[in-house]
Image (tube, rainbow, N blue to C red; front, top):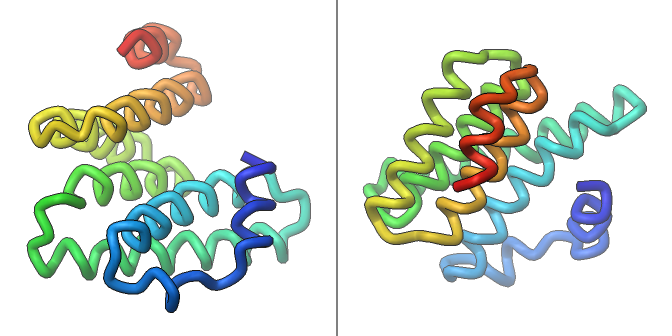
Length: 140
């Protein structure tokens, strides 16, 4: 995740360039996930807060798109909500959103996003010591 965070920093602000494109959508989703992960590994509080703000901004942007009934991002919003709940220590909410992210991605045939959701759910369950669920999601 540290290397991904470095890539985000070196890319700078690409939102204006990618505005209203599929690439912009994917960028924002991945920016949110990477920023939340960077919040966890940042050693300085100021850096952690910077990453947290960036993550929240990305989540807010995706929520806005979801409110406009974009059917192709429902699973991604659930994944971002799961990661955000995980970051805030909200276990039940995180588990619920990981489940919804996986199920919705599968239902809508976003296999790569289903795999990403399973991978991140597996990492989450490992972090809370639930090795049974970790293994289930790792296998999927």
